[in-house]
Image (cartoon, rainbow, N blue to C red; front, side):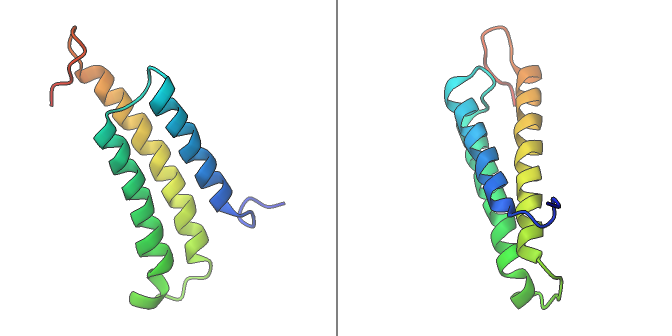
Amino acid sequence: MEIEKQNPLYIYFIIQFIFFILQQNCFIGIETFQYVEMIFGSLFIIFVFGILGNYVFLTQIPDLLRKSIWVASLFSIWYYITKWITNMYMKDKNGNIHW
């Protein structure tokens, strides 16, 4: 089965579940507001580009919802890893993150 024909919603939920487990139980969690930003950002991508894209922007891109779910999944992975690495470098000896 081709990767483009699979339902990306399952992969999106698996990625979000993995990040939820990492956020709650592991030492590689990010700040809570950063985690919420990641969730809302990925849902915003799906809503604006996937659902409203063909109707509001009047684009005729086939499978725009499917493609936006893939982009939202990649966004979540990129955002979580980037925030975890930058938080790791910005912490002092006491574990406080300096913005």
